[in-house]
Amino acid sequence: MTITTPLLKINSVGKLYRGNKWGLRNFSLHLTPGVTGLVGPNGAGKSTLMRILATVTKPTEGCVLWNGIDLADSPNDVRKVLGYLPQDFGIYPNLNAVEFLTYLAAARGISGDIARRRIDELVDVVNLGHARKRPLGSLSGGMKQRVGIAQALLNDPQLLIVDEPTVGLDPEERIRFRNLLTELSGQRIVILSSHIISDVEAAAVSIAVLQSGHLIVHCTPEELLQMVSDKVWEAVIASPELSDLRMTHVVGSTVMSGEGMRARVIGEIAPTRTARRVVPTLEDAYLYVLATEREKQDHK
Image (cartoon, rainbow, N blue to C red):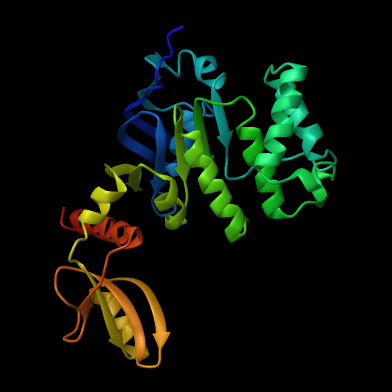
């Protein structure tokens, strides 16, 4: 039997909403197996893109091809191999985790014995064994999120789309989930959208940066970091000077110290005479890319 490597092609996709507002515009991206991280500010178009890929909505223009088949013409071709965890994941509060997953498995056409084995496996994978019989309405937000992760994996998907999957998870659970994504990504296309840059950095083999419905950059984490090589500084300033520094520079994280406010600043030139270069992080690179794009738009 020939195993086909999954291929997802997003070709010049646009989505127009009421009020003549474009959620996406002229968006193109080709993906092969591995974890791709989607990052961008609120309103950048990440959720719109994922809803299109999950066949929840259709693009206004352009097309999405799954192994050469247009999703708009044959949505069931991708739905059969799709796992999707939206940001707002709904549950039935009176069902327990096993009952809920059994119901969803039946709705997706997964037979009884296979479903039972898969559910037992997934309950352990997402660390819910101790709470498998508790009503979902009684679970914490993080535990409900783990149920959502389990349902996205029910059909052992070839295309896995997860929107802010680590919201509500404690640090140990976040690490567990990031490791799980890495393990799953061998022959699957995994799309991870997150505001937590460290989650993307830990799991993704490529990163797509979105802003205002457009794709700004799609590259490896290493290539993204190279963009800010020798451009990240640590400056120690008095706290009252921070607002002025933000007006003239791209400022990342700040930490109060006995000497003053330690600020990470991204730019070509040292922000102060005493500033020193530091090793860049993916968050620094992300802020630099967004700031560079905003500057381009301001000069148009």
